[in-house]
Image (cartoon, rainbow, N blue to C red; front, side, top):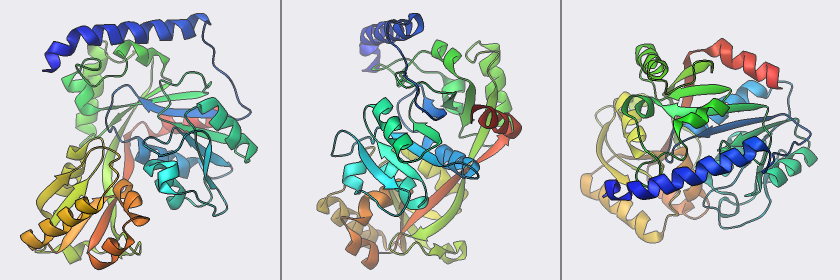
Length: 345
């Protein structure tokens, strides 16, 4: 079916190329704000690990900086500017904010978080709130806001297996757009050897710009937490236990792979669409499957847990629902990243 869409991918490519050309020649212009902007984005639809990478940047920049995250707030039920967190405990709702901005606000209470489909306006609001460094989440295609450091994330699979543009494939932009990147981050690396194989293949096939520094990261499980209380659950509790999982994320396979590294026995993974807003029927379905399989625990992602806390608090208390907290570990290029962050801020 996707092969039939290839002509439309050509039209999509043409639109992307013309738009980028207009920025390059100054017909469309980027606007600066009174704070350095670090953009974290990708060139493909679907999950590449942006949120845990943004979390890693927050933790590295928090010392000596007033950090703000500016995002579109994908799948939120509002428009315009919404201050998700003012850094002093004032939070918006998940419906008004979007799940990923709310996840960051809950995890880092002193973080400024602003959502706005107009990134320039959102960044200006963050500066008004006191930000002196702005992390632009999912910002590679949003060129109206000037950025001081342009970071692009690609998965190992994207490099080694290739892809084509939307709608026939998942690419938002052609690989030639990577020339705009100041840093390329290869995500979902199993180990250093896989990172080196992917980066070497990318350079040799001219998929990755020769002059752009590359960093490799690995996704690791940090902890399991009870969603109702944030209590950490010792992994020994899972010995000889049956588990079901559910997720509504861009790359559900990445969640399945993560569970395999945790050595837990997953009987079933229930997959919902990315940023899915859960309904009562979904909760009943999950509970029904847990009872049918006699599962001891239900495990979901941090992003899904955020969407459940406000609407289905009772489910989280009466059922053994845990979230899997993840983190990014740099396996190659740590000093490159630190040098670029220091230079741009």
